[in-house]
Length: 324
Image 1 (cartoon, rainbow, N blue to C red):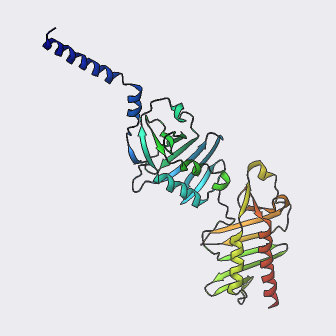
Image 2: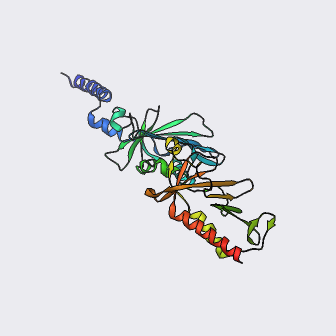
Image 3: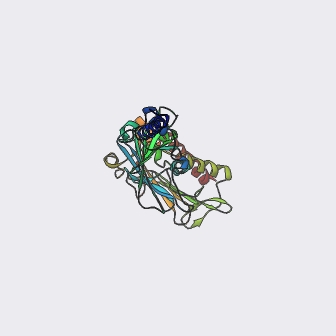
């Protein structure tokens, strides 16, 4: 065979071999291709300057639990499985973390979604924003065997990406953790007026520019609460917190109707802002009193010792005022 003919044959063979390898890459080559990220360090949520999250749903598919929150009237509220005010600090931390997340790497899948834990994910996070009313769902899957990351993807999109695994810990919170545990629902740091009722006795104090006064029918009496006494009382009001919540059928089992002189505390905050709580019987096993906010059905468990201290302070101050 002539040399020219040999060169032509070798050239054609090389071209054919190159075309074959391009169409049929080896396993090693496929793996190397998969390691080339499609996107690097891109934001998970592409929110505009005025765009904000207004609806958030946490589906823990492992535990079969769903928590739904909605932002309305400048507050985050729980919508499901109960309707209640949410802990604004905790939900705010969720939103801040979610908004700051970045995709560390993005790939087109080489295997089925099941291999990444993204067919039936551990968590499914639903999001709706003010600018985009169509809800998006983020899937959080298994841990990556290579990086200290987890697999994740947006529902309906062809690729997946890696995220900081801390996100799973954040969204693994409980319903109790998400609920607002403050007893009185007023936004002011200190109330402008307080009403206590214990047994047959009622006491009312009002805050004015020059201090706290007892409020009796017919007008104001001379100031009897000095700064230290008032601070002690207001501090104890702030020390009250909800130990637990009883909803639905559990709440219906607790009756407040057969307590004709049940203790009662009412606070006034900003104009037209009022929060009142009825105190029920003791629940010794939980070292608590049953309580219920006026106008609500949920029953609260409030620390028994803190309730007792509050009423002891109030009755002591009232007694001293009468003797003065």
